[in-house]
Image 1 (cartoon, helix red, strand yellow):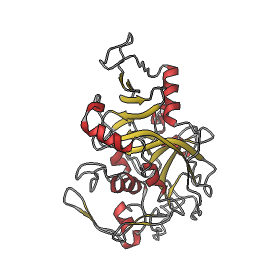
Image 2 (tube, rainbow, N blue to C red):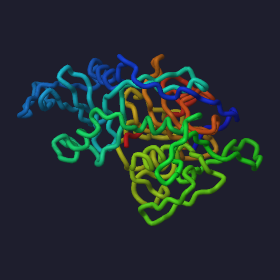
Image 3 (spheres, rainbow, N blue to C red):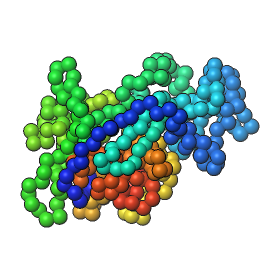
Image 4 (cartoon, rainbow, N blue to C red):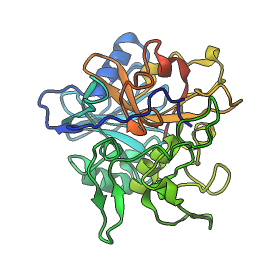
Length: 362
């Protein structure tokens, strides 16, 4: 579930999140404009309150100063303000929504020079999106609550587990956030084996049993305390923190499966880059379709067959124009956007770019 180790030490990181950078352009606005300019998808905001169609057949709806329109590949709804600026993107079949909000910069200076400055905030809706859901009561109430909210989103959750992140405790004193490990050291001494053990789920980090909805109970192991492997990290961020339903295994329950392979092959959400295979020839080419919050899946370990073994979350473009993701890795012993063991870029021909196989929007 993680790349093979190249270095054992984990750097100390400071200055994890810098807030309120003025004038930063959002990933969504940039990418949607690129798509429209190149003809990949097209938006015509010609509709009014009666939902009339334009000559191109696209439909847009205006409510006050806001305008709704539709894009394809994948099918999604886009909300713009009166000046045409993106306010929200909501994908059919997915519960994650990307909203435009105050600018932030995410960085990990001890591990990488990459800095992702973004106005994108990724949040979890109470129901999967579908065409026309902007008219439904549940969405109106949800959007009214989060339209201008600075409450922690998925990105804020994720960076609360990188190196140097301070601990956070709930009212009962349970530590639910803070610097996370990937897993305990592998003491078997097997040549060519993993540096650190996988299978550390979110309840191992928490150190408390977790009752799943299928009746199973996740029982933490003491040696895995404060540890999250790659899929455990995603389950912590999306499941325990954002409350996306969680399966107890890849086969039991409903919601987000336990492993990277299970997540990639599940029917949850929308497949942005469909899985076609796991060989080097199956590397997807359309990474421009990715947006912040998407889960990306990799084939790293040549010892496993027919299985994807690593998962991360798209963060956005860094200040040098590279598409960056965050994931938990054994090389740095925990969540990172760093360069140890391979730069965290999805573009180009680096280690992770070449091993990318699919992507999903939950």
